[in-house]
Figure 1 (cartoon, rainbow, N blue to C red):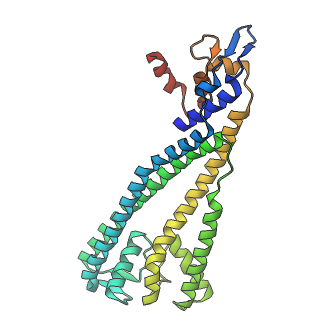
Figure 2 (tube, helix red, strand yellow; figure 1 turned 180 degrees about the vertical axis):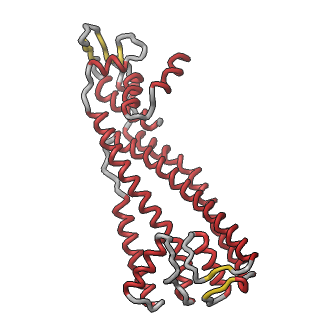
Length: 311
């Protein structure tokens, strides 16, 4: 929010602060945009860059949080692999290597892919599977929470960039390219290593990345399961990120249109009347900024009224 205020303040400083303007409303009332010395309030251009860098420091807590989530993921996979390895005789299905099968079973359980090629068949194994699937879903919730934090922070940066009319940032094109190559490599792996037919390999890839996991097609060889451990984790996360960026792109497009309209439209007498919070027939820079933020839906009248009363 501070960066948005800085950007709006710079904009009004460039446009309105150098020349005192006076307008007359339809009711004959005199309104003025207060003059302010540009040299006193305007900051050098490099300060805007420093402000952006300072704003980026707000991401430090999020990065720490993501590291904690990744650490929890490693612990989860380690404990899960150990537990399922110890009860490997209580899990039935197509088996290759004890440790690999335990890690593979832990991954397909956490991601809810659930091929069905390995299933628990004793009470202890079923209880552990239930515990680990809910723990995995909790881990997924934390990852989605970090994704939501990312989306909010991304929108704050977008607001700042829009204020300065920077170029469009479109991460979706990059992610589309990454996702295309991932699907291609997975498809080739499923075709060559698992000796699946063309349509079966494509079907296996689609059912895996979407966590559909019917179980009729799965990875049952040693090499296939080694690949699957990394593939399933990366593909499910990548697909979730892909849809996250699609949502982000849609929100960015709508917000860009709104911000551009708010910043470029000309003021009317009604705008001056609405922006004059203290009814002194003069619109200051602070009042103008508050009015513009209200237009952008960043703040509301309910947010302002208690502060005005306290002031």
